[in-house]
Image (tube, rainbow, N blue to C red):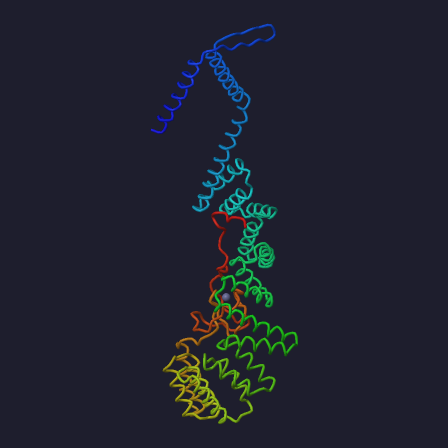
Length: 461
Ligand SMILES: [Zn+2]
C-alpha cells in the first residue's frame, strides 16, 4: 500500500515537471569549437537524463568486471569458515559421544579449514586422548602452552595426564603453574591442596586449603577438619626437628580448632603429660571425652594418671565415665582400670554393660583376662578367646578413599596416600599387623576434584 502510494507520488512529480516545462517553451543553444547545437528545453532535459542513466550503467558494469574476483574470494573464505566450524562442531559432538574415528577426522578437517589454533588444537588433543594416543595428546597440550589464551587449557590437559600416570611431582609443578594463570579456579585449588598435602608440604597445603574454602571448592566443615589434620602433621614434623615448643603450639591449635578430633586431643594431652603438665593434659582428655570417647584418649589418660595408686585411678576413670555415661568406651576404660585395681566385681559389671552396648573382640579379651585374674580359670578364659574370633571386629582407623585399615592415625593413608581420609569405624576387612600397619584395599581412585577435560572449550578469560 505504502509502495503504491510512493509510486503514484513519483509519477505525479514527473508529470508536474513535464507540464511545467511544456507550459514554458524555450530553446537551449550550445556553441562549442565552431559547433552550434540548438534544441528545445524538453529535449535538452531528456538528453541530460539519458546521459546520466548511461553513465550510471557503465559504472556498474566497470565495478562488476574489476571487483568480481575479490568478492568471489570473500565468498569462498566465508564458505570455508562455515565448513570449518561445521567440522569443529561435528568433532566436539563425536568427542562427547566417544566416537574416536570421527573426532580425529573432523579435527584434521577443521584444522585445515580454520585458522583458529586454540579451538582445533583442543579438539585434536581430545581426539588423540579418545584413541588412547597419549603422546599425541601431550604434544597438542604442550603446543597450547605457547599461546596465552590456551595455556591454561594446555596445563589442565597435562595435569590430568600426570595424575592418571600417578606422577604427583609433575602434577604439582603443573598445578602451581596453572594457578599463576587462574588463581581462583575451584577445581584447581582443590587439586593443588590435595597434591601439596600428599607431598607433605603442610604449610603450603594449609595456605592453599584456605583459598580453596574461600573459593567454595571445599566446604568450611571439611576445611576445618583438614586444617586440624595439617596442624597435627606440623606438630609431628616440629618434634622430628627437635622443636618441642612448636610441636606443642601446633597440637594445641589443632585441638582448639576441632576439640572433637581425637588424634589432636590425644597428641596434645600426650605432649602436656610428657612435659609434666598433668592437670592440663587431664583437662584436654576430659574435654574431648565428652564429645567422643575413644580408646586412644583412655590410653593417654592412663599415662597421665601413672603416678596415682590403682584405686585413685579407678576414681578418675569413674569421673571420665560420668562425662559420657552411655558410651561403650567409657565402660571399657573403667573396666580396664578396675582390672588393674583387682576390683573384679566392678570390672565384670562394666564389661557386661559394654557387651550390651556394642559387643567386640576387645571386650571378649578383657573378659578372658578377668577370668584369669579373678578365678585363675584358664578354661573359661580360653572359651572367651574362642568366642572373640567370631565377635565383631573392633573399630579402627579406616581409609574412606581406599578402605585400608590402620592401627594408628596418620595424616596420609599408608596405602593410597590420601590425606585426612581416616575415619574411626568398624572395618569391613581384617586388620593386618605391622610393618605397614595397613591392608590392601581396592585400588585408589583419582581425587574427585579431577574431572576429565570439558567437551566444549571454555572461553579464555
Ligand atoms: Zn587409603
